[in-house]
Length: 104
Image (cartoon, rainbow, N blue to C red; front, side, top):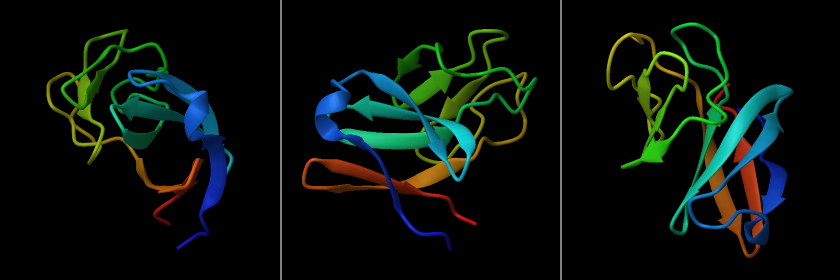
C-alpha cells in the first residue's frame, strides 16, 4: 500500500463541501458529509466525465452528465448507466489535517 499523504486541513472544507485533490497524481475529489470525509477518483466509470459538480445526497454522488450514482464509501454504482465501481481512497483525519492514500 502507498503512504498516506496530506491533502487538506479540516477547516478548508465546510460540511456538505468538496475539494478537488490529487492522490498519487490521480485527479480526485474529497467530500465532507457532517464530520466524515470521503475521497474518490473524480471520474464516472460510465463515460469518464468528472463527478466534481455532481449532487451529493445520502452518502452518494450523482454524475451530472448521465445520472449514474455512486456510494461514496465503497464506490459501488447505485444505478444505471454505470455498472463498474469508482475508485475510493482511504481517509484519515489527524487533528485538523486530512490524509488520503490509494489502495494500491
